[in-house]
Amino acid sequence: MPTTFSKKDAEKSAENTMSGGSSTLLTVAVVIVSFALVFGGFWMLGHAFSQEGHEFTWFFGGVLVDALGLWVAFGLLPWIERSKA
Image (cartoon, rainbow, N blue to C red; front, top):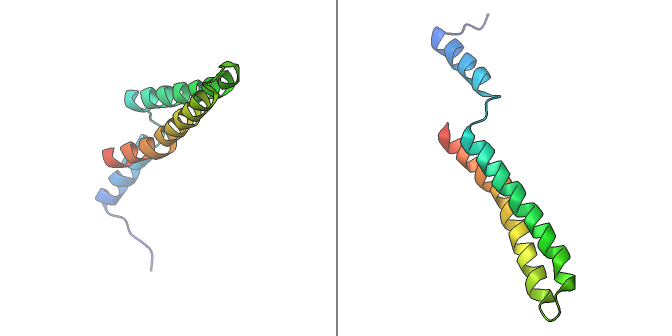
Protein backbone atom coordinates (compact mmCIF):
# COMPACT_ATOMS: atom_id res chain seq x y z
CA MET A 1 0.00 0.00 0.00
CA PRO A 2 1.55 3.36 -0.98
CA THR A 3 2.12 5.96 1.67
CA THR A 4 0.14 9.15 1.23
CA PHE A 5 1.00 12.50 2.69
CA SER A 6 -1.47 15.19 3.44
CA LYS A 7 -1.02 18.79 2.38
CA LYS A 8 -0.31 19.67 6.01
CA ASP A 9 2.55 17.11 6.15
CA ALA A 10 4.01 18.49 2.93
CA GLU A 11 3.91 22.06 4.23
CA LYS A 12 5.53 21.02 7.50
CA SER A 13 8.28 19.18 5.64
CA ALA A 14 8.95 22.18 3.40
CA GLU A 15 9.00 24.47 6.43
CA ASN A 16 11.58 22.28 8.18
CA THR A 17 13.72 22.12 5.05
CA MET A 18 13.72 25.87 4.52
CA SER A 19 14.51 26.74 8.14
CA GLY A 20 17.33 24.20 8.45
CA GLY A 21 20.12 26.42 7.15
CA SER A 22 19.06 29.77 8.46
CA SER A 23 20.87 31.51 11.26
CA THR A 24 19.44 34.31 13.32
CA LEU A 25 21.14 37.34 14.74
CA LEU A 26 20.83 35.78 18.19
CA THR A 27 22.68 32.65 17.05
CA VAL A 28 25.48 34.68 15.52
CA ALA A 29 25.78 36.83 18.64
CA VAL A 30 25.90 33.80 20.94
CA VAL A 31 28.61 32.15 18.80
CA ILE A 32 30.71 35.35 18.85
CA VAL A 33 30.37 35.61 22.64
CA SER A 34 31.29 31.94 22.98
CA PHE A 35 34.43 32.37 20.84
CA ALA A 36 35.42 35.44 22.84
CA LEU A 37 35.02 33.55 26.11
CA VAL A 38 36.97 30.50 24.94
CA PHE A 39 39.87 32.48 23.48
CA GLY A 40 39.84 34.84 26.46
CA GLY A 41 40.13 31.80 28.69
CA PHE A 42 43.07 30.56 26.62
CA TRP A 43 44.74 33.95 27.06
CA MET A 44 44.16 33.80 30.82
CA LEU A 45 45.66 30.30 30.98
CA GLY A 46 48.79 31.47 29.17
CA HIS A 47 48.99 34.72 31.13
CA ALA A 48 48.90 32.83 34.44
CA PHE A 49 52.56 31.84 34.21
CA SER A 50 53.77 35.44 34.09
CA GLN A 51 51.94 36.56 37.24
CA GLU A 52 54.05 36.28 40.39
CA GLY A 53 51.95 35.01 43.27
CA HIS A 54 48.67 34.88 41.33
CA GLU A 55 49.36 31.94 39.02
CA PHE A 56 46.65 29.71 40.42
CA THR A 57 44.04 32.48 40.38
CA TRP A 58 44.67 33.34 36.73
CA PHE A 59 44.89 29.70 35.67
CA PHE A 60 41.72 28.64 37.52
CA GLY A 61 39.91 31.71 36.18
CA GLY A 62 40.96 30.74 32.67
CA VAL A 63 39.62 27.22 33.15
CA LEU A 64 36.30 28.63 34.39
CA VAL A 65 36.03 31.09 31.49
CA ASP A 66 36.81 28.29 28.99
CA ALA A 67 34.18 26.08 30.59
CA LEU A 68 31.64 28.90 30.42
CA GLY A 69 32.42 29.55 26.74
CA LEU A 70 32.09 25.89 25.83
CA TRP A 71 28.85 25.60 27.80
CA VAL A 72 27.44 28.61 25.94
CA ALA A 73 28.34 27.04 22.58
CA PHE A 74 27.35 23.43 23.25
CA GLY A 75 24.76 23.73 26.02
CA LEU A 76 22.98 27.06 25.93
CA LEU A 77 22.84 27.61 22.16
CA PRO A 78 21.20 24.25 21.35
CA TRP A 79 18.71 24.85 24.16
CA ILE A 80 17.83 28.27 22.71
CA GLU A 81 17.44 26.80 19.24
CA ARG A 82 15.16 24.01 20.50
CA SER A 83 13.03 26.37 22.55
CA LYS A 84 12.42 28.66 19.54
CA ALA A 85 10.98 25.80 17.50
